[in-house]
Amino acid sequence: MSLVRSIFRLILLNWRRFVVPLTAVVVVGLLGAAAFFFWPHGLPEVAASPEQPQRDELIAKGKYLTIAADCEACHTTPGGEAFVGGLAFKLPFGTMYSPNITPDPETGIGTWSDAEFVRAVRSGVGKHGEDLYPAFPYTSYALLSTDDILAIRAYLKTLRPIKYTPPENDLLFPFNQRYVMRSWKLLFVPWGQYHNDPAKSEAWNKGAYLVEALAHCGECHTPRGLMFQREQGKALSGGAVDGWIAWNITSDKASGIGSWSDEEIADYLSRGHAQGRGPAAAAMRQAIELSLSKLTKADIGAITTYLRDVPAQSASYGTPTTASVVPAAQASEPWNPHDSKESEGERIFEGACASCHGWDGSGQNTTRASLTGSHSIKDPTATNLLRIILDGSSDGVGTPTTAMPGFADAFSDAEIAALANYVTEHFDGRKGTVTPRDVAKARSP
Ligand code: HEC
Ligand code: HEC
Ligand code: HEC
Image 1 (cartoon, rainbow, N blue to C red):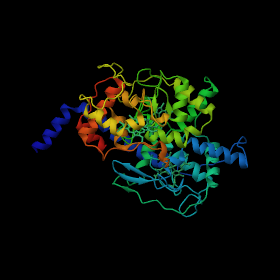
Image 2 (cartoon, protein in one colour; image 1 turned 180 degrees about the vertical axis):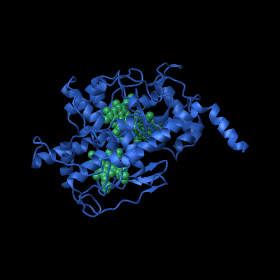
Image 3 (cartoon, helix red, strand yellow; image 1 turned 30 degrees about the vertical axis):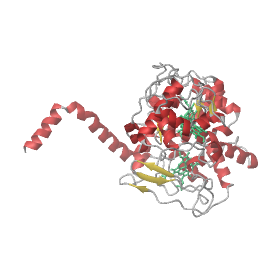
């Protein structure tokens, strides 16, 4: 009895603290019920507009859009056949695998109707009405026009059908229950396609369509809330992917890309490297390799126009410091093997890093390895710096020539901490603060 009484007392004394969670539970419950009635699970009417091109022109249009949407990135395993799926998505509650989207009738989407395809891409619903998980970024693709989705469909139909069934998902209860997604979708999937803003230029609207819908930049660069939803109030102010930070790309001058020139943005997005801004590694490198590097100059220009106009927000992960606390090391100073003051970090850099990056960070064999100005080195949390040292980076499609190997197995936590702090001090003139514990944590993000 006294327990019940004390619980009541607790609630009465702290009622304010319970109002929000209780309301949230009630609202989510009601929405869930509503979702069953209102979510458009029926098949939509689909028809292309009179402007849709025909035959070869349609296939070419669809191919370009498929590249811009980067469908291949998630539906291909490293070194595997494109579009057959099987790529693992490791989530906190289990592992899921992307499906085969080649036109194979048994294991792919060969027997899907156009209407089923449009419904999947726009509303995250599978062939048999089942709810799909938002690892498939339909939260962005919902904004695509019907013509564009049908063009992608037309292109995918021309691929070679490949028989392959990806592994079964292995997700914990209740996340393995697909209907759980339904109220989530009601809350977080945009309703309706992208509409041009007549007050803005054509390039701005093209850029908005690319950034928000097709190239789905926000899926990585927008922070996520407790329910894994993108926090649209903080859109593009920085997010997390596989333990890496996807930096703030709003027009903020201190932590975003407000101080980058148009040319730097274009270089970074189309070549994966901008002089004085460092290289694009990990997921960003892959997005560039498979998708952004193949876009037209006009489209990259449109993306830049739009990004310039995204209101400045400070980074969701904190602002990189620009103040130097120690004088920047003379980067081009010749290294003296007999220098007794050589630190452990310096010794490791010499053996493992200098051959590719050079002592001045200018890059030895490829401009990709030019580190100067890289956000990863300026970031006081050293998140991406530790990630690249541990995991390395490649294009994910098996081109080894410009890859950086991972060093997770080569060095201890203490050695990697010393190396990271040396890199920070040497290239950014700041005292690094990485501890061996930080490295241990980064090993299992
Ligand atoms: C960020 C990763 C990602 C991208 C990009 C992506 N997909 Fe997917 N897609 C997935 C995952 C994961 C699933 C499985 C979802 C599930 O099982 O609930 C999926 C499911 C699908 C399905 C349902 C297939 C089935 O058998 O149920 C189709 C169709 C599809 N994707 C097509 C596309 C197309 C077309 C594009 C590009 C416009 C694309 N995907 C881009 C990750 C992605
Ligand atoms: C699959 C996830 C993903 C997608 C999609 C993605 N990015 Fe990124 N982006 C990242 C990650 C991770 C980094 C950090 C890479 C690094 O530190 O080397 C990054 C870095 C960047 C940077 C460098 C910022 C800086 O301060 O150094 C820019 C600019 C950028 N992305 C723009 C874009 C744009 C524009 C799009 C859409 C057209 C986009 N990204 C789509 C994950 C992504
Ligand atoms: C075999 C050549 C090679 C070696 C060895 C190498 N790197 Fe790299 N590194 C690269 C390349 C290439 C890139 C660009 C990554 C990309 O394009 O995906 C890179 C990128 C980086 C970045 C930038 C990451 C970003 O997100 O901006 C840092 C920091 C870095 N390397 C540090 C190191 C350190 C520290 C070592 C030594 C442990 C090292 N590298 C060893 C080739 C190398």
